[in-house]
Image (tube, rainbow, N blue to C red; front, side, top):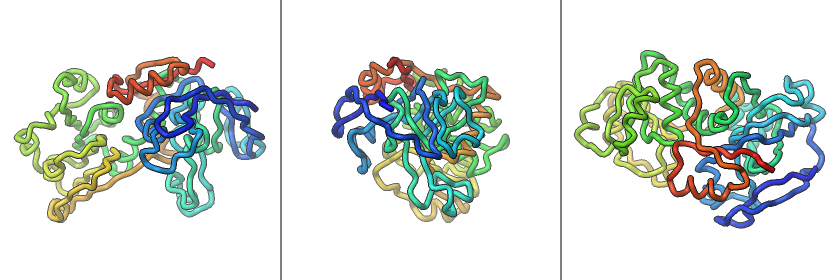
Length: 338
């Protein structure tokens, strides 16, 4: 089958129309027709080969909402059906048989999971993924805004599961952008007390409207120092280096500082910031198929939707530059128009 897409032919280049022959559908794979695909900073990092390992031509896009149009022979009895609405996130394949996969931790597959982008991603008319990573969508989920839940949403939801966050927890969120705004909505739905750390005073009212209990200026050293010993969990969603010491000090006994932002500079952590109070510095990537299903069920049940701006997929380069320039109003979604 011929698939139409938009691909980067070299690192950092603008995307161009690109058609490829997908070949026969593998036995355990599912082919999905794309309706919407989110634009994530990770797409830019892969297009630019910022992390190394990108392969060209590169078809980015990993926050896909679409419909099942074909099932491989071994995927036909796995609960998926032709025409079903589904989502595909960061991961397209894992081995199913290593210890991590058997334990339900497929995102840490020991035999090398395959990312959706390196499997020919969602800036396309169609894409393919292993059946386990093709996630059924609840009927009440808004299709136009759901895509970012599959990467950004699960990225901030997984730490809440890892650290057993509940209605009595006190949680801080650093950076209220594409990731942070979803963290606030999820935490509010779970009943936690939420403190947002933002350097943008103009966002205060909108952050409170999302469900934060309070907003603290992340550039106000006095305000940060006044928070000593308060938080069970602080999630950092930013990709820039900050003075982290006030945040370590803001952790309660056995509190966790958890990073999901790809800060390229090493974290400086004074040993006694962790030793005193049995605190910890942790991190995580995206989630398993089971965690993705749980997130989408929660989002549908309590009406959690990322805030998105929509572009036609034919304007993909304009959308990428919008995100690259920091102009996105939280998240950007492409609507397929092939």
